[in-house]
Length: 235
Image (cartoon, rainbow, N blue to C red; front, side, top):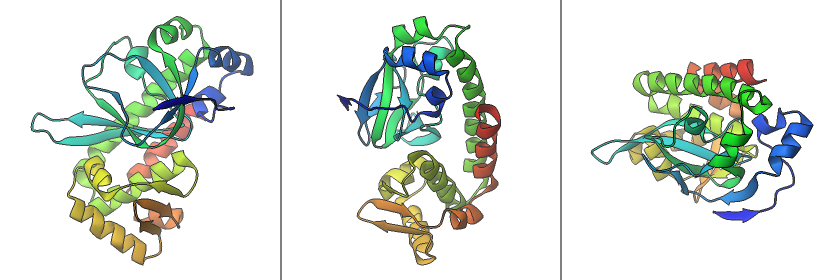
């Protein structure tokens, strides 16, 4: 992770703020570059920063006692990493890891607490975002239980595609298998099939989405439900 300077906030929560409010908060934040597999939060560890991704994507992962892990939610430029602090906690049982490298704006926790008060515009937005993320986690739980690997693979790609913007991003099959909680061979088989059908191109760890509409036709209804809920609450 490195610090830098980024001219504008592509984060949708920050972009939705009144210009004066955003300008004030921007002075309290610093720009950082997040690299693949950066661990931003550890289970039960202290939360030091709040993150507003611009074009990076972060996974929230539940670790199990036997060493296995599974993704329960992802967040990108539509949201924020740090809701436990917003809700009054100092820690989280989840691991937060960078899924797609990119940049973000971050704010120290004590600054966040002093700036995001109940009468602030960002506080109101974060209440809606909390509900939207809760809906995503609930839908993901049902999806992981009921839908096949191909449907979940397509849903994951579409959600990442929506957040990153460009059609190409770095992604290893090993990492995606971890996110979906399946074997790497299962991911490889689905990726090969989608590539044969002309929906994606995958080479040397680079994933290119060629036909998002085609992926949506093979995805489960969870992608549309979660996207609709975010649009309803935050658009």
